[in-house]
Length: 368
Image (cartoon, rainbow, N blue to C red; front, side, top):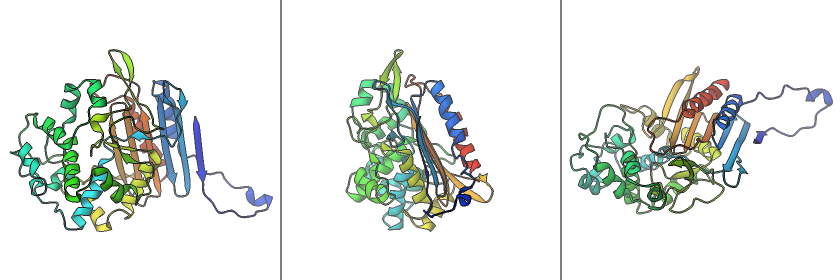
């Protein structure tokens, strides 16, 4: 285990009697227990960040590369597949704040290509995309089914190509009145952001999110090998282990293309909930939206009495991430796990994911 524990305090001179203080409570016991169990079940690495006010713990277990056997460290980057969608939502809501986009606007008002690909979906609005009520088919399952591992790793896709893959799935036109997560929603929003800004999504997110939140180790992936140090993920191909850290199919993706660290993901959530990225009234409108909260964020009032928390999560292939934060940004826990290698097209959730969710929930509750 590589561990870094930070306790920030003022420096003062004291007498010997004044040093007899109670040591700070350990923040990460539940996550350490999870990391030990994950390692015992074949997970290459677990990295986590826990913060309670001015007390922080950053820890890493395992290795970031099974070939080199190099120890994982807290600063190692990871794919945060799905957990980058709230960052895209911030950029969209900044357009809403500026009056350039309305939540009730049909998508086609800003992206005519959308209805060219989905001609029967003309009632879908920007709000439907942000709230996961568009009903659009998820492009990810047919992508996985129709591409070889070589193609997934080395063939980049455009937003239009991802939408056309989704359009090949036969579903009745939306929107719908229930929550229906679809990666396609976010590809539409990413394309819309590029159109409105006349810039690439990487530049938009850097300006709107990464830079103001102090996320110096976060970027939108481009095709090719991600820059090291990375947590390497692995899948099984015909029973043989294969490095699956390079995934060109999601390079530049608004749903799955962000590479970050656990500490940067914590920084993002704290910046979002404390008004450093969007206005307070905008944040409130996202959390209280009908039918569901906007932006891929789950609020909870059940962790600590009188305190609201928000969850951000993501995962796919060999990666899984979870982050929970009090809305004042003072209590946070973020964990990234490289899951044990398995076949990529297995539909059920990896067994370690619910255990990981329970560990992060216990961690948050311990800080009440």
